[in-house]
Image (tube, rainbow, N blue to C red):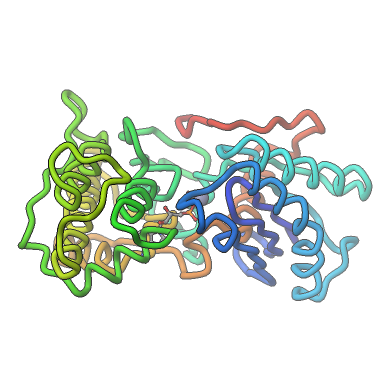
Length: 339
Ligand code: KG4
Ligand code: ZN
């Protein structure tokens, strides 16, 4: 079965063609980083306009690269949430238009679930039950994956998503957007032991996350006690590198500690990570150091950030399990993962 996937939940417009949930024939992503850089974060209205401009060329390019015509597609899969409402509408309405005009069935896919599928995509037999760790600009979730489509939510952030915390800390430190890669590279020049930050704890919920306190600790360290976000930096460039290293260490150690706790408590067989923050090399190093005995699955580099190959891949399984969606398929800014 050849599936055409469409992704437009946030600031990447993607189209991919995937055979039988696994073989990626093409995976085109048009990133909007250039557009949002000046604002230090995604501007939803600008994101929507760019999606409209590029979605058809991106679909054409994906078909061309796969050397297929639309008539050879068996299923259209589209991310229908969670995400920005306007951005979602553009992908979903494009998918509906294609489906309506060609008669190809349509299926809606959960974007967060697809991030987890990305890490398991090339395994013959996924290791269920598996602990899913979604860490991206919009999400921080610990999920017990009993099977594809069957999940229990074990923990989540009560404020900022982890990627959002990296982006905000980077902005405070005058680093470019997206903040994750900028902080990771500055941290390489610093020593994490020079500063100590406390990870967020949520009373009574040991598997939940909170990043807003950590963000404020960094703000006061680099700009002075009770400073505002737009106050000037008061520490030297080399101290800024030490702060970046200490912040990254605190945030990533928190992810590793809570993931390992959830893995033990919920008798999982493996861990699968997904989302843009899973690109971070320091996080990989920490998992290798702290859990050398646990099978930890990472998405291939092209499947870590938002992309449509993970949507097409999961769409195949969703269709086999639940069948096609109708033209009533709705966009959802939030969708629960728990089944
Ligand atoms: O998965 P993604 O493309 O979008 C969402 O679904 O949200 O993730 C984007 C996020 C951004 O917040 C970005 O700063 C973060 O992933 N990110 C990283 C790294 N690369 C991207 N965070 C930490 N370290 C990285 N190397
Ligand atoms: Zn994402």
